[in-house]
Length: 240
Image (tube, rainbow, N blue to C red; front, side, top):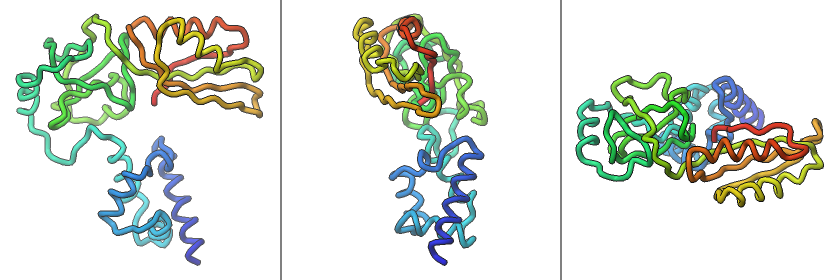
């Protein structure tokens, strides 16, 4: 009976996570589970699944908390509008090629959830005590944010270092890893991560990679060069 409750609870959480556009495995990382465990006294994942499966804890109690935890920029503390002024006047670090509200020299960082690069429409999000986080304007995490926490932002036109991810699909016989390594070397780009696999159902080779760009034109050039290679089917930017 206990095993059945565990399976039911896990299945319910997976279904609700999927319904909200996430996978349970991505939400339930070690840090997130430790946070939930501290609040609800779960020793193991199985205890949590069983609690959901028997109705002791609701699915939404777990899923809502996990989704909140996957947004590091957010805080449960009430936002103070004066915080914006404090950031604008005190931080002097490099803005990484971004102007926020017409000012340069702010402490900013780029959101890992949407990885904005030059050319994207962007918005600044005031993160309490951590400066301004730059998101793409169409980032899903910004849809329901308090307007008082959002600042107008634009690219300064200066080159900087930006991280982005792309997905490449090719015929299964294509030497994709060799192709992308060669193109990145030609462009002087640093590959931060790369993962290749074969989809035997579609008989295609797929590579997901994260690259550090040196200037705003690198992404278009990288995609164009890879697309020009024989046997490459498609190349497009993805969100990490």
